[in-house]
Length: 330
Image (cartoon, rainbow, N blue to C red):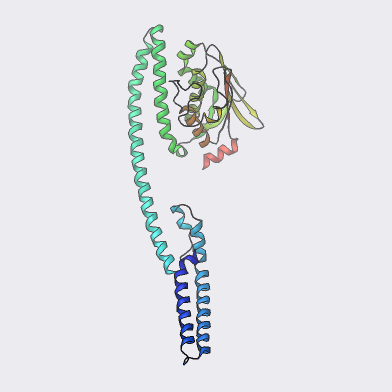
């Protein structure tokens, strides 16, 4: 970089020095020895100057070539040359503009999020009214209506939690949560569909409590059990909790449709539904994506085992207690 920057001046100096040497050769009245002295002295002076100039600005140039983002310019050392000072000032101007643009876009995003959140909450009121009216219907009319209501409620919740996900680090509150209560609340929401589809539950909780965030953990359980119920029929969903080498694991297994082997690595991608059942209108491809995003934010490892046509097992591996305490104090 430095050679390319100073190359025009070096070429100019060489031309100038050669001109002096050529003049001494052509003009016999000028002692050639004096011309050679001048040539050598100029060359030495230039070499010393270039060495001094190179070393005084080397640190700044080296660090400048290593940065990849505009917000890393604060780590640059103090500029040493006039050119570096001008460049550093220009980088400061660009960084300020960049930060102003980010702040502006952040405010717009926050405003849009607030509007969407208000809209979702406004929708919750008529949703509650609809639920009360559905509960007053007879069993035959209620079953189909309640299933559609649950789908609409789940879609609204997915939308709300997706928007909250951007600020999840500020929304976490780690506390002792009773696993059975969370699971029972989820089953209660899905009771009508479970009765209609003949889906039962078998719980074997060797560990009853877990240090986690209640709201986000409930969301994850809702998504996982909801998927199990959606793709199961006339079978039981097994839910168990246990310790494996000091790590708490929550396992949810169903005997439903299962997932093809080639689809398993992709089920956590946003918008991915299935390659084999692509026409499934009930699938949005967002539930498991959001579950994975929440799990990552809470340092929970989520694993999947599935055989197509036989069923699926989702395993949540929670951090150890001391790691939760670290998250809680951050």
